[in-house]
Image 1 (cartoon, rainbow over the protein chains, first blue to last red):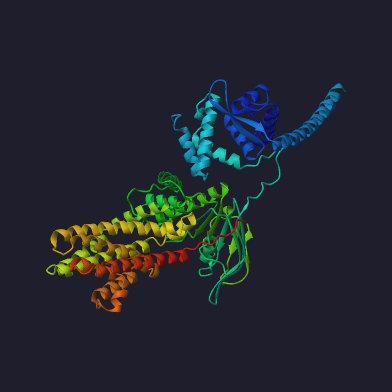
Image 2: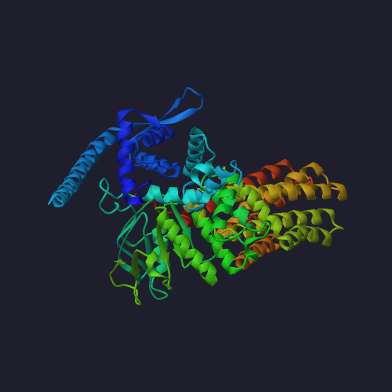
Length: 117
Length: 283
Length: 224
């Protein structure tokens, strides 16, 4: 499932920043990690523009490095601004997630209660 | 659709959309390389070249909404600013007290009856005439499309491209190729060997437009550029203005016809009498 | 270099104006043919005709490119590149014209110093270029400019060669050189002529550049 555009924009940037915070990677590698994590199978036409946008905003920095299989690849690193953005967006996300969690648990609890009655 | 032309078509569409030639080349190379690292052909990975080009440009211009983004997009930087600008010839006051600020991604229309100084204002913006009073600040990268006479009668379109390209520091072949791309955007294929004076009025204006844009300026100054246009070309012209705006350029159009106001961000009305203090009104 | 591109395109532009080219190149020939019986006079007329033809061609070229000049300036061209390119192109054309007619005279006429005919015509052409450019800078319309050039050439032809008026005219040097080449006068004529030609050329070129620099001034506004 690929989430709809506005959601995906915000979440995708966060995911990319988070993955790069863990270790730097190149475009295709990020795409594979994203798929493996179960978040979404993001097509190249969505992932690469997002990476370029992050680069434009100064949150990531590219560097060229040779890979094992030969051709040089463009690896991305988080910049200081990127780390700051990751921290901010991560905090936003946790707030958001916890808030929804609370609401959903409350409603599940209520319906369970309701069923029990 | 062979995978080999995909990068070329991609780059061509980027140029069409107003990207700076160096940037278009860089993006095309990068995108080709991205396809290589994914192990698929670019048209399988990204879809048709021209559609992906448009998608990429609009993505790069967007500020991401959602939990992380938010707030209105930051206004582009100021590319032209007129403060209390006036112009007089001997004792005749042509302009006075004009204030105008145009930012990247904005279109400003200058309107007013004939003779109230619209063309003079544009010449002041370009720097061909100095204002008698007031201050002007302007980016260096500017293109001018005058009302008429801005071409050399005896040179062909391609030679114009070479000439204007050379003035901007471009090599002849690149200048001609850029010129042809820009012409294609206005649905025009310049015929080889046809001097400018043999072009019809509408086509001559298209040449004018292309020459104004050839050096990839950040600010475009246009003086009633669609006299002699037919309906279709007129609409193409406003689509072109919208494309420039979306690509982050600033456009100032002197006009006495105001088209669909959607595309115009502010209107400066010089009024039916010269003189009189004016400031632009946002739409 | 921008000046080279301007020069190349200027030459192309000029060669496209077939009728003008034919008339202007043919005019010196007409001058020559009318007095063909007098070798000295005909060569002198021819030389004057060359100078006039080159000046008029340069005038037309300068005026034809007036419309694009401000835009080229805005695009980043310097005044020297624009003016210099045109002068370069027309000088090349003048050299070609002079060379052609030198060949003609050398074959058909019998003069005292045939080797000097070449430089004679060359000087006339070289002086013609900045002079035509200057007239073009001063008189923006082709008709007025052409009439002015015609007047100058007529005065040059008709004025008493010893008088002050003739000396002040731009093509006086060609006349003096003509004396040297055709009538084999003293060497001092040669040096005086070259000096006059050099001075005229420098003055005309300098004034042209100054005029265009003033007219094509682009205000340097600060970035916002």
